[in-house]
Image 1: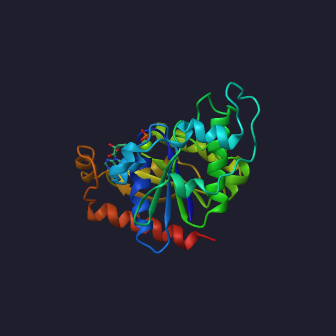
Image 2: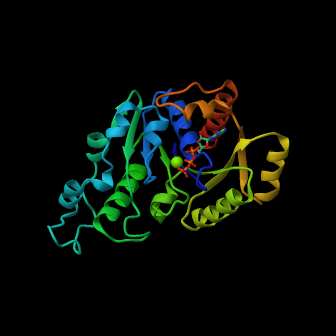
Image 3: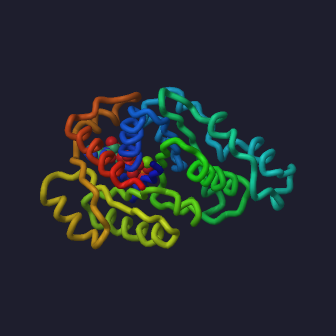
Length: 254
Ligand SMILES: Nc1ncnc2c1ncn2[C@@H]1O[C@H](COP(=O)(O)OP(=O)(O)OP(=O)(O)O)[C@@H](O)[C@H]1O
Ligand SMILES: [Mg+2]
């Protein structure tokens, strides 16, 4: 299963991606957790102590220069197909069935920047999606611009997290258009921080024809999480919602 979590800032992408990764990791297969957000907090959401010390891939200048064939002072010419197959195992932080890879600031020179760092990270992301056999869960920024066409086609699901607000739903619609354009087949919304039937109705009414996979309640357990490091106790209700979503996706995987 290859999944990207996306959506407007603050809607709960990292929180839900983290819970989903932990749920998947209880199975037999390993899970590659990929933090594509420059602000880097998936490791914390997963309760990985060592996550603080990780150097993001995009900041590994020596590695990137070497793999991209860049010489000092000349970043104009570089390889388009760097060697990547050893990277996940060398640079991922491992905890049980979870392997965390932190991409770092991909958008260094603005989106579409053709610098070696950007090219390397984009290539690595494609490699992870196309060539690896583990489950893959990506925590994206409010968009999925780092996925190129061929890569996006191999992504099983783009999950757009929405809050019951017009802004979050507006962003979801834009992401959906882009995701369709680059060939993602299954694009679903997950309603988060929902406080009752009225909120669910609001999302359904405004989201047009984007399939609303499920909703997750606003839950106090997350307030406790924000006040301390490490893992936290998820409420029974949230846990049930995550399991429900996992089941729906498993049944919907080709
Ligand atoms: N169901 C929920 N109930 C209550 N609070 C929630 C819920 N889901 C997420 N939160 C809280 O919302 C805040 C934002 O969550 P999170 O950081 O996961 O969002 P994000 O979309 O990854 O944000 P960013 O765009 O900054 O990366 C956090 O404080 C988190 O604890
Ligand atoms: Mg986040």
